[in-house]
Length: 148
Image (cartoon, rainbow, N blue to C red; front, side):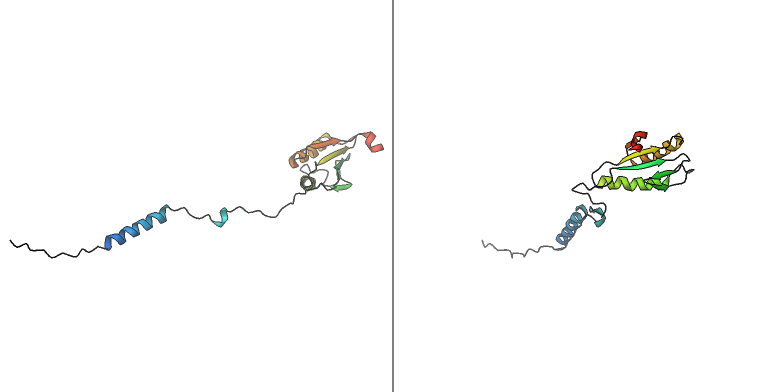
């Protein structure tokens, strides 16, 4: 008996499904990848007040005088009108004084020099401004200090 051999067929590899699978994997990895941080998410340090290593000599205290008519005198300078209870000029000045004291690593101190017949409400107004600014070192002067 004679055995006949069949002709060997050549095997072809289909490229279409392989290309489809590569594109599906590419899309999957693109979708599941994390996005890069945007510029807005980066931490920035803006210029501002510079903290001092050494303590600078600034006035240890600020004197606020309250006169009998309600006029407020800050270090011999008149601020705000006697009938204004909000005291915006005093607030701005004390706010800058507090910032300067903090940047120099010092405590902001206020001494109140009150006239004998000054209104108690005016004293409360000044103390409220000090509280808004965050100055807790408020003291009252006595007559013996003025004589020296």
